[in-house]
Length: 637
Image (cartoon, rainbow, N blue to C red; front, side, top):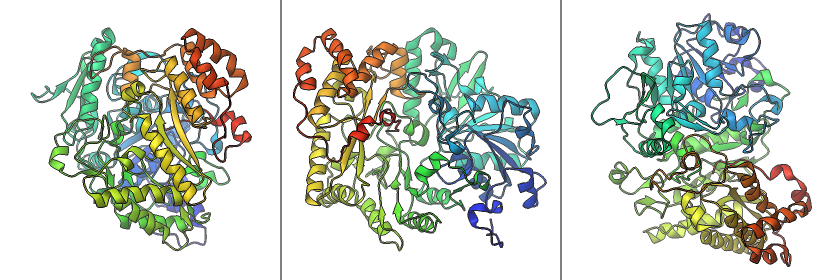
């Protein structure tokens, strides 16, 4: 898109954005859009927002793309009519965050805010936007194809447990009116679908595009994977657990198989993922002409999610951590797709040119901040691997965890004019940085990474995710032993002392994870107290579709071993576990004491309520202790 020739500041020039109204289409000289995307998020023209990425991708391929952000589904449906019919298809983006996680807490209580809506206002999106939007669009325009993508349909591409309704649901395609679903990162499949529709294919002709889900009358091939049907999974939780293992393993392959699942008398076909993006493809996705700004329609209104990432830079996609409670690899894939240094520096210069930039880049990161440019020494080994984690139960000997390229990025960004400092706000895998490398030069670089990270890239608080202290629970989580956290904390404290810093190490923990019992939580409380932590970054386990932990929660069975696993399920059980996080709150002490007696762990009473910790963690304040609203922070890793 060519720059405007007016004197309007770029952040207010509607011609620089994809159009959202009929007037904006006319300003660009359009009578009709090729593609219209309905988004459950506000329209922020930034590479962290899915609708913008898909819109800009299609625009770069030569199509006219319009976006309708957060349409009103309750009134006369004028928002669904205002742009008319697209030439090729309607797209649905249910949002960068799952709608049900967005709406409800782990206790199934309604949240009162929405970070992806102007002013943080709640109520601008329905539950399950893919279902609601597609039903309306199909009623209004029954002959126009509907393509749905994003987190919501991606993680619901097969039968899945719905925590909020406490029941198994069929593949989302059977519950909505979309003609096709794109799962995973959607740039390549959506461009291919648009190309074929533009050439005259009908949507029913398009059956082989990778990362698509569709109903098909084809006969499954000999090498395809046939899952237990939805009805068989409803009848037997063990069938559902067996299905999950197939789906997860195929998500982690370089070249997967076609997966089939029947629902009633119809067959859902799930085409395998594209191979991991090349560096050139990743650069192309991030180098599109984003304004990096909210659409001018929101002038004067803040969008909380945008405020968090406005001065951040994502350097790669994918995650090979394979955490049992995380959906990143199911959506983005296990293999890392890294941008080039040139592309990252180009974006960094764009950030420095923003009108509100004060010299601080808030995050040089990714799904896991320090996986940039990492992969296998021998890619032929990776091409055969279906292992869900490259780090668990121990780091893969084929994994090249050299942090040298990442150090080069940090130093090059910090050397740019206008950059006072760059921070790492994404989660850091300290076990990855501490894992031994076969090359001593790389080991030295990894030690230097820890030093530079702690000394120069922490904005006062470094967030890491040990998740638990119990080795039994950590094994189920696919996380390293808590002993490694002790080692990392020693490094953190030593470097803080060496550089005369007063920074905090902020650990994330989860209660009620499958395999976690009350005595595990009691031990967690005692051990973290002895480390002088007053925990604040914590959450109660929330089952979300397509995670190992959710399958165990629903089925009671570990999909890989077939063994039964205890899980706290009732509100009382979950509350009892969560309460141990807050042993230092006076009002929680009586209930914790009762719980300790019930589980015969009176030995922990003196550790928790005897002598108080000698010192609080450096920098911790009573004001932070009293801010209970930060105690239940949601996190990805």
